[in-house]
Length: 264
Image (cartoon, rainbow, N blue to C red):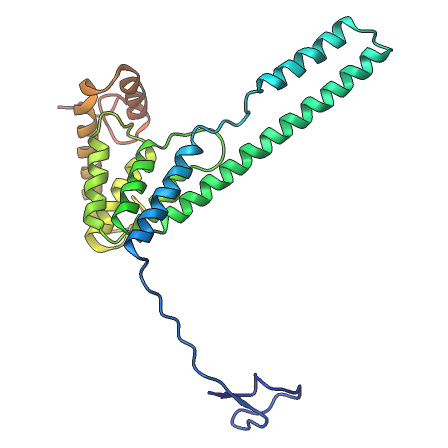
């Protein structure tokens, strides 16, 4: 291709077809090759370890033993020391040191959360079977931490990247039936999206896209999914059962726990 956009000397723009001086350039093509399966499996394992290691982040990290000791020293100095003397200066120094340690811990916590989100985003983009298994695993176990963004929704959005949509749906259906899991919003959304992706390759926003007939069918499927959850209640632990019932109370679809239609 000849173009005046690549030239050795500056000059005025020339009319189309008048290309003097011009330079000829070669066409550039980019081939995107699929990632090697073994390479992807190693990456999935690495990302999974990162996500496991960054679970359970707290919005306000607890003080370490060293920080607690410094806090106690500050209190002792303020209560027993001379307010106008050396003890007051000592207490101020200790308090500043404690504040610096807390800031460092908060910064470390924020970095861990940022690394966790990045790891989830990288996992969400992977296509292979091992990536699917990891996505389903972390979606099923994700709980609201009250701090930062949920990786569950990131991974739900990444379901469309998976190649084996049938495997993905089977794993999510199994995760939904598993009495060790909670029927979280993320897991429910993942199950809905996986069914749509396995059916026509496109995930829709439930309740907004599709015809009236499709929405009724989706609602019927959701009610059937709730029946599955209700049927697993006896197999759940006491704590899990309590949390599951609380979730069922909040779901808009009628069920025996939210004063909706009577369950057969």
